Image 1 (cartoon, rainbow, N blue to C red):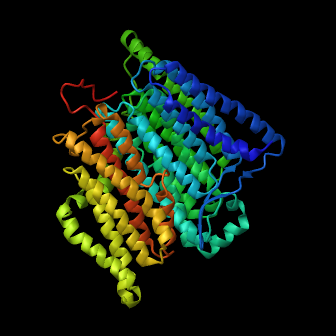
Image 2 (cartoon, one colour):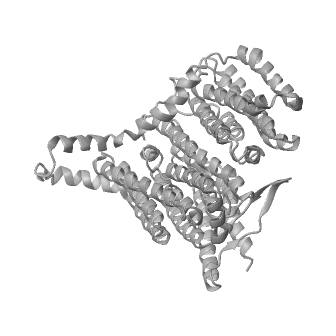
Image 3 (cartoon, helix red, strand yellow):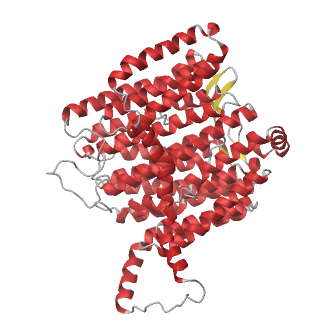
Length: 625
């Protein structure tokens, strides 16, 4: 048996099914659902057969030969796949639960507008899930990480003609992107720590890891903290817990597969996968346990007072994942893996039967209501009890805290940059950029002190432009242009920092240029068609009348944000390879540019094309599902 072909098949087969689904007519529901069910069922049977064969042959970890997508002097971008016991458990659970969900969805989504879109998105998620689970290094994992984020956004915003699903989809995607800062900085620091694209298989070499931890303990701790931030954001741990209930605005099947069972556990997966690296760092283990403990406490009390069953299940799942974080920090990774399996199946079951449970509880309460007679005054005072109740009811105000400390800061900074208009961009920033290019050409004649601060200055200019794009409300084309030009300032900053070859520049900017120009002309065309409904103050729902334009612009948005459909995705990694190991400020500025730029772009797409129809002669649905 060619094990490599089997492992690659687990990735390519769902992607092929996804492409075929897009080609089927929307009205052929039976064909769409049967194709999805059969493809996942075949994969499930193939996975069972492969696992039996693999266990009978010793269940040794398999690392597929690395595929180089880009190679230059001192830098290689590798796609690497890795299969071990952790991958086997996640694949079995993910495939079986996905099969259950798509079978359930054939009836639940019947006659629903967007039936094909739902199943296509589920297949794309399943492809992303397998891609991430089988990733063998950080670069491959980050590609799957990004695809999971996009599929999450699409499923939350499935009811795209409603206000709350779209708004919450943007919010969840924004928190995902904040967590991406952790992955980006961890990738950057690991390149300098190992001086190679370290694979997860090599992390199992205890002596190698111990040597680098001893020599570079501060860098190793920095990487561990970055991984914890990424894992906490993905698994809705403190202080990011508030996004998960908001994600429940999507259909119940997508809530079950995403936020009840599979996607929500990828923070646990990341910690288990990188455990050989951070398990020798006491500070890292304490931080992971602390995050898990705080999350478990706050989420437990929040779940007890929530008025909706979906929110109760969401916070119950967050509580269990917090306990998994504690188990992993204590070294019980196998227990955490077993815990993941039980929690995934339990939450899937609870979410799928939740409509029936709600109906049953309403009937029971109507006919057999018994008031609560417990007296807790003897244990706690009323003020303390009621105060804790209100705090739990408000979800410990984590949503407001995150908005105040992160998103409102971006908005306030961006709102103070009103001088970034079309006129000032062309009369001030273009000449400044030309001066920067001139300084690059005559680099040998530039004073050393100036040469050392130019990368920080140019990266700061890029971040300021992107922050303005994030806060822009009047002019969508201006916001798009600012993100587009921000990438050129990033390239200039890195060019001044270290030699950046023309080949690397082309790899980075080629996708940016194509996606940026195509997206600009899409906005120009929409502006001519809808001149009075073309701002970012509200959601306009233009996808209702311009579905093809919306799809094309969404692809342009993905290309401009560095999604793995263009060479820019590799270019982003190339950018960080030219940031030195001691340049933490520059690395943070660049990663912030990529993250905030992605949020700004998805906001442009969502506000123009999703949400309630702006025209009064279209039907207006309820705000919430």
